[in-house]
Image (cartoon, rainbow, N blue to C red; front, side, top):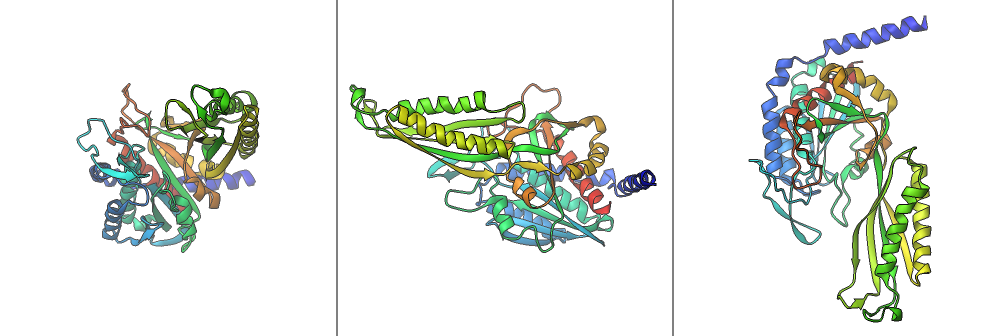
Length: 424
């Protein structure tokens, strides 16, 4: 009897999926719009908590669709609420809208020439991580779903989030601030979906992983105290630069010799070193700043404890002092296994079963994880690399490129997942 009941539920769900599939012509008529939005946003990027023009573009678009709009959420965020013609649950769809302090150097006709100020320095601004595509895709989803309200059993909440890459120094921002301001309430969101374009995954392909899919991130600051001396007489002082070098070497042994990497990946990276003012002076102090990436909270605690212990011990061994301060960034991006299982048939139907690929976890981090700390969520990767090409540049680099032909699959996937989740 139980098997018959499960079979009936499965057949009913598949039937609802088939009935609620939006006509292909509705998607095709939208593709060029999505591409045009993406290119305009790419050409006019804005840094975190400063996405004023981007937010205005989104809000204007949603209002034209008859969607209820709330602006200035977490500074520059925009939230749209679309109520279907039938009662039901609430699904959240999230896109990040901020760019990076990177100077673009590719040859795109819509490349960015925008300049701004970041941490007191003039910088180029570029959508070097693909958030422009995420924004355009979600604008497309809003349009196609707003024209198919009769197929929606429940409510769709469109969350256009600022500052995913981090808020300016001294400011709050991103997913954490949106949650703090109640974005998952009124109405209460039951589950949330998000995607990330990937420049090294071919167009047409979707990659996913249940459970931990992206790492938590932490920021550490190591302050080293030595004793200043003339560069010609190192024996008269304590060299904080030498101590820093030994600390960097020691931190890597925590990963290579003390961390069970067959369980989960982990990374410790020193990204910035500051010390000294002149070539012939041994300085008094040095500062190291970096990041820790982990996919398991037990491993994270072990790494944190060992770093603090090792930094102090190494500095003392060379006659100096040092402290290590660790601050949490994002949580582990954790895909709810039941939600993934529920949505896989939809993804395979839309993209093709052979184009939906299980992947291993990655050590990049995402503040989408904060939403997943509150409610079930599913975050997946969308192909953005031209099939057959050997030219693929990593995210966060000046040469980063995305093939626009991959955007429509993002629109289709999020739209169909929303309908199937709400109408199950």
